Image (tube, rainbow, N blue to C red; front, side, top):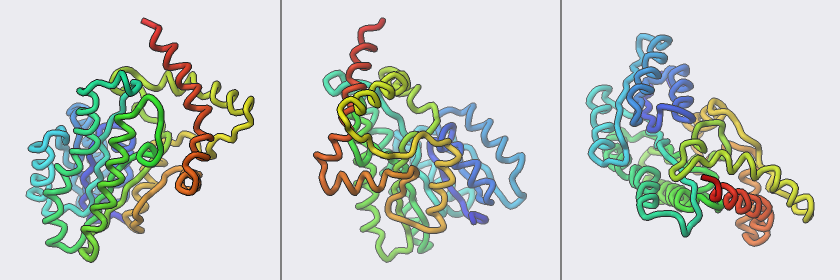
Length: 293
């Protein structure tokens, strides 16, 4: 499906990004890997080259896409070396773990710099190239947190809502150009995301709050949202890459997400009632974790 295409993937050193790179390479694409961790990028690039076809190029570009000059160089260097960019996947992102009143200005700035500002830094330089060719696809990886609220992760939630809005605006600007734009909204994926959130690891909160939320819901006869559980990065990557062949405005990698969003759009209050058990359980665990040294 991806033979002869050039795909740039940010946040490619681990998780969904690395899985996207492996899948795209297996399907014949030339892949440009971008992330801050040089050692991981080098190892992944070597792995992909070991099984790539002679016609494929695997490039590694260690950079920080939250820095405008580095993001622009990523795009311009790729065009200079490979002559084209068919697909740009803005996957780089990071979360945080804190209540709103304990979220610092530095964290807010960091969350938006990587999750949001970087979209402009990569998309602006690639658009003239794609428009000159009359083709291309920009895929922005947001999150279910870009469509719903979640406690103790407010700056990330706000940033991912911005990713969704950015993509909607981008789509309207691209009408009739032959360029597609998609926002992907994964739910739980088995990556290191929750263990490297800013402030403190968030994985412990999820682990301890889940059984409490289920008990709270049972006691109060509340039906929790029926959303598919955690999937592997490989499953997420496979579902995201499908939209290159069949472009869609929004892509939901987990079953049940779309139906719950329709419910929320119809009656936000009722949908939030179904989220309350999780929010209450997370508040209990958050306070417990705050008390520990």
